[in-house]
Amino acid sequence: MNLGVRPEPDRDSAPWWEAVRRHELTVQKCGGCGTLRFPARAVCNHCRSRASEWVPARGTGRVYSWIVNHQVFMPSMRDAVPFPVLLVRLDDGDDLLMYGNLAEASPDVLRPELRVEAVFEDVDDHTTLINWRPIP
Image 1: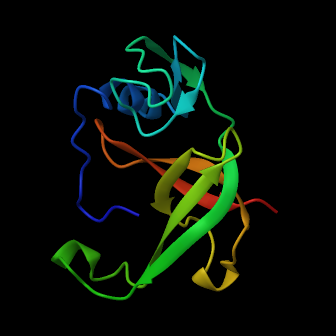
Image 2: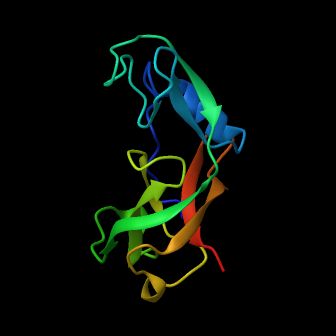
Image 3: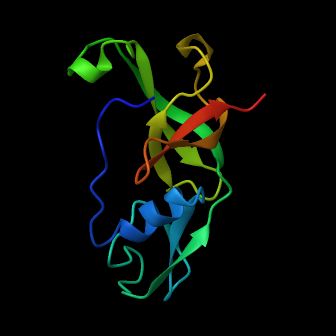
């Protein structure tokens, strides 16, 4: 669902957005203690190491929380409301939470712990977003 909003990659998130553009879901892995983390950050919360690498994530998880937006905040949203925004706990680790819109389903299917998988939406030649669809 293209709402006209574009991400603004920064120093820490740019490699993640590049992977998403290739339709790859990744998370950071600490080079000091091996802890997985998302969102990206320069320093590990567990061991304070600055070393890290990007590793593949499974691309599946469970709905932790959600909202269903009914407000048209900008003209590009006029035909999109209502739309749900999900907070998904990734299967790769309890501390890995990721936001995204619900794809290919009605908000009526939402419930806590609903199993979902990542889907990639190519918005334009430069931007890809991650949404979530229920796993049948």
